[in-house]
Length: 257
Ligand SMILES: Nc1ncnc2c1ncn2[C@@H]1O[C@H](COP(=O)(O)OP(=O)(O)O)[C@@H](O)[C@H]1O
Ligand SMILES: [Mg+2]
Image (cartoon, rainbow, N blue to C red):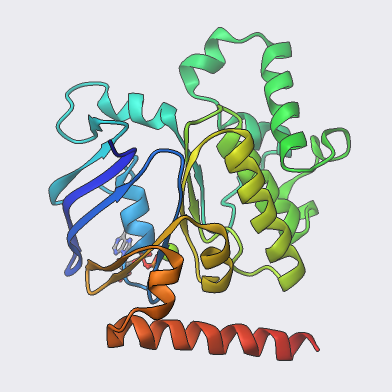
């Protein structure tokens, strides 16, 4: 049984981006997707909830076909999935409360009274270690980079999804905030008992956090396996990627000191 299954997923934007992706994410695991910039990692994540519609192939979420599951399939799937967007993607004109509340599925929000919605938002902010009392009425522009990421995560978890998709949750953060957000990801994944799929450039962090990792290259999955197998893989494309990631991590340390 897979929680997310990409089945021969194709997508082109003038040029081919996804050229037949086959990949299975298992229940309860932390799963990472690596790959060079512009290879289609975000596009692949977006196909799980219909933000990008594949040209060919399908995606299955929790055993349900997203694109051949008939009316309502997409809405059912979206309720299962919390999505942490690249760059937090908060609405500039809305305060933190409204931004987080946007993460509640519309039909559930309609059935809730104000106090119930407020309790859900409050609890989500506490789970990401933001003090609800002091941030609820702030606008995104008044938050630090790390706080914005946390608010984006609160929006993704407020509806208590069983699957969390993380698109570069630590990109742009300094090493201290990166470590803090990675601890948050592992902590939340355990506490909420979710399946997590994480797109990240922080290869070292992901190899530490994740049960399995994968690499997208040339529109297809070039590697999928354990962190240990990834580190020691002999495929020259994988090797070049690992070596560059290690070199970049070393550069980060040099910049810090
Ligand atoms: N909505 C879109 N319209 C046109 N091209 C797109 C769109 N979304 C992504 N692309 C293109 O698809 C390719 C993969 O993008 P993306 O998935 O964002 O890469 P990354 O692996 O860095 O996340 C890029 O060439 C990008 O320009
Ligand atoms: Mg991306």
